Image 1 (cartoon, rainbow, N blue to C red):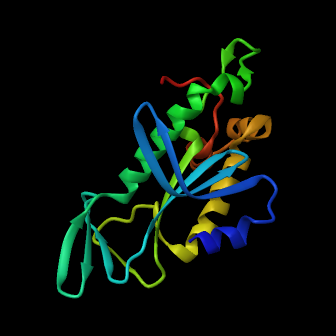
Image 2 (cartoon, helix red, strand yellow; image 1 turned 120 degrees about the vertical axis):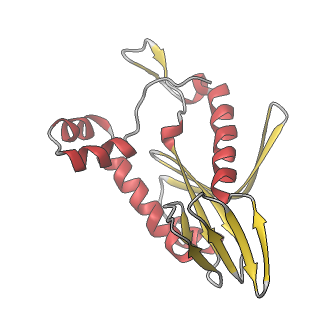
Image 3 (cartoon, rainbow, N blue to C red; image 1 turned 60 degrees about the horizontal axis):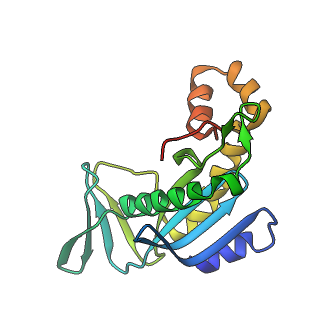
Length: 190
């Protein structure tokens, strides 16, 4: 996964990739396999090195199967979201240094959850078995870069005055897509 990310973003000036990143805040530690920091936010990529099969059922429960052996596993999607929560809190601890004030300088901008996206990368040798559910976060490792490009493009489309104008004249389908990825500068609770 680090190879794919380095190859895709090494020469892109406003995208930074951090591999095997460990952060600590208030006694909690998060270890992120890969963090992609781009102009609109963050993508946390949780890598799963699997030679067998990862299964996910309609309840979002994960299991791993190799040959005849099958065992449950923690949800890598929940794991990545928890890591994002710790990172968000750490960034918000320093938001006055990192973010400008919004709403005519009246409100301190913060790092809300809308700035975070999560992907789970299953190794190229692994198989994903989607038993009645297809979480958009769960992808093969070779598809992660394309998904990150999609996330950045949607955020670019939804951001700023241009995105606001587009939203004002959008049909329902376009409105839903833009709102899903719109990076709002509204404060969030810590």
